[in-house]
Image 1: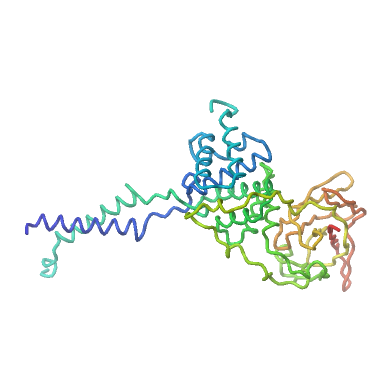
Image 2 (image 1 turned 90 degrees about the vertical axis):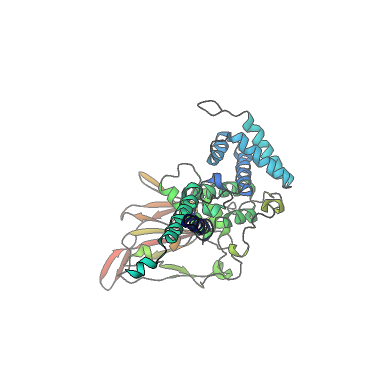
Length: 116
Length: 291
């Protein structure tokens, strides 16, 4: 067997070992993540909490500000995504109504100092 | 040297290079990405925001079971302590977003219940040794004491992960009343505390609800001729969640009342204590309780 083939086999084995180690045995640990990385049900719950608070205080600016933790998506889009998930997963009707109300209000919301 | 010549350097080099390439790819080029993380992995400041939102939602709907489930997803070792600590830090910073009260209210709701005999117990004054700083050690305890054991902790009902969304099984918030409202607090006890180890003459306030449980987050108004100050219970949890204190200046007469209502306790002045020929300024202990 030519030496370069042996080298390539060894290289492939090494890469395989490195991938197993890096992805399985010792993957990168994220301990300080941002809310954008939350699982969909937690994101939906976050939006639902925001909707609950909005239902009580009617502070749409505060509600929009709370949803901005999920990144650059517009708050209305985040609320709509939560509403879709709630529909698909048979959330209680009352929760869906809260999310609908928030999503609807955010559709027409404009931030104080600029475009939505 | 013969030994070195026998090592298949080409193979060893290939494996080493392969491992290096594999690690570069998995750790840098394409690391494992957590797109389905749970709240306990959030950065500390985001966890704080999460707690505030949980507490605000609890204020809005009064659903304690749901609030507990949400808190459990943060996996705080002691959720009540985490809430109280965050509220304390917010109050120390002037409570810029006004969320400290909600945090304290939820802390009170989720904390394990006190022993049932607490409501009728008689406080015992314990003087700490002179070498210990008074603020680090509780010098007022209720008897009988001991950790509560009759209520399951939050950890026994862990957050249910993804198979089904945990919210789908949660009933509609019932808008049950929160625990704090009730009749105005009334003075239940007043006594002089002669503890030579206290550095200041203190007005020590303890606030309890009708069942005798300590109540954190209660606004206490202290007034005197030409001044007034608000203090809050629960900011020294090591002394009890219903505890607050205020340092008196000897010779000045104070009035103390629960800010939300109730009759003021007037004519409070630092008492003089004497023992063994030594005289010092003592403290006053006031217990407010809902009837």
